[in-house]
Image (cartoon, rainbow, N blue to C red; front, side, top):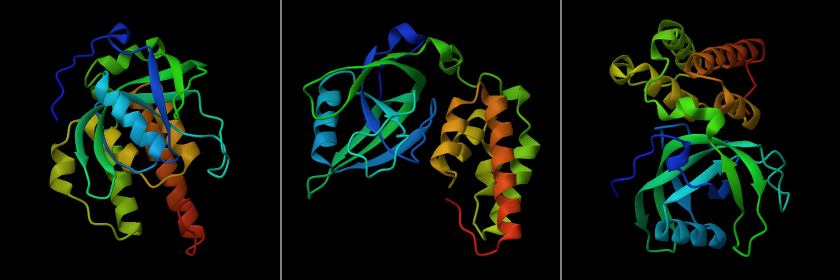
Length: 221
């Protein structure tokens, strides 16, 4: 499903979005996030989104998953459904393309089975500029840290693809795929710009490497 919608500014985006709270799921502008949808309330959300502007808001819960109505972080990222498929067992398999981060202004009282909020994109105007700030990224530092992490965890990495990727795609893809916890993912999401996100990615990875070195039996949370 190709997208024909162009987002050039906050004004181009829907001001009310359905919310999909999912711990550990990080979406960033122009990033691709595959999702497997099976809960009835979120199947309804996807149906409604497809009938409208095909946009949903990915956001992380602050509370434990066992909480019925968890508190949400105030910052999430809007994504547009750019791929969609139905399975034979009642699931949807979709892919979201990140548009822009947002800050929740107000969660709305709604009759839909899923939550909705009025959101503000203006604090993240830089998200609408593709590859903004790429020249300020410490690319060598990012790749050096990735090599250390891959070696420590015996991971296979497509180094040809890594070396060919532009800085924005590299940093954001690594942040989205990182195995870190909710708080770390939220910090990466809320980083002021690409340079800050790269620096935070390096710092978090180095902390995890040092922790694993001091405790070989530890696992990433």
